[in-house]
Length: 377
Image (cartoon, rainbow, N blue to C red):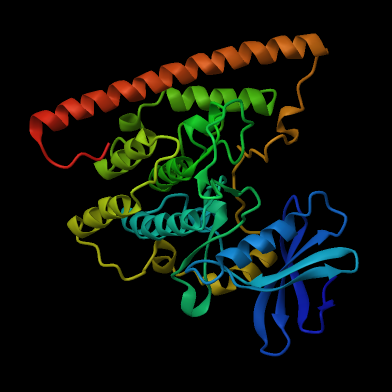
């Protein structure tokens, strides 16, 4: 496959990754000798993920932190997508930095990540698979820019000017480790869920792990049930204990949003920017990996030679209706009974969770009435 030419303009060099859809290669643009990334997927893939992804990138193109698309077409037996070559993902960098980021690095990343999600939401789409693997840094003069990638699970939340309807009994879409509680409960995702996932990512960066990592179960469905139990049983204050209160405030705000609410992105950025100033940090784009001396521009080459760190995301979800939910054993009646029982259990948990949220909001309102000030939750 190496040295293959595409459209007479691009040349493949070395493979740098692979996924469920196909493979990713490093290559060069022959006219400029600039490095590029090439994604390949079998032309008969159903559904053709690269076609959807190329349309998403073109719709978003021009935004800061959105990779540029140079070419998409079917070439022989493959669908081919040629795009910007980016640097390592935040998960890769997290591993390089001994699986913990400093408060300064986390805050600088958070500022950009909230802005990327805001831009996507302005384009009437939600991402639905927020995780460190889906954020990369740029290369060269853009090595301080955080890019949002992989829109294979993205979905419109606004259709014809109207918000999509509230629905329940939805399959888990995304990565269980970072997905919102409402997503676990089978509620249709909306903008609030992307942001709640971001909150978990920020805490993950600071703590080095999340309490619901490493759980074991016989099936993915059972594992997701265990993750949900852990999330429901871990109060936000406990999750964020030992870290600035802004992180718990971020998560409380995200969980307080109603299904079709427009999030206040400026408020969320302000939370972290004010903390950044109070801590005396300088926004100099010097991240932990820069301090450690890692050359992110040559990361792919180094990783190829050394077989560098891999993501430990063992909580992958999937697209709606995917094979995630097809692994149970037993006859049809047993499956139906089990499904009905779990549906009732999940509804009960959901009701308890919602009642808890409502009680928290009422308490916040009473507190606001008593003490005054700006009410955000």
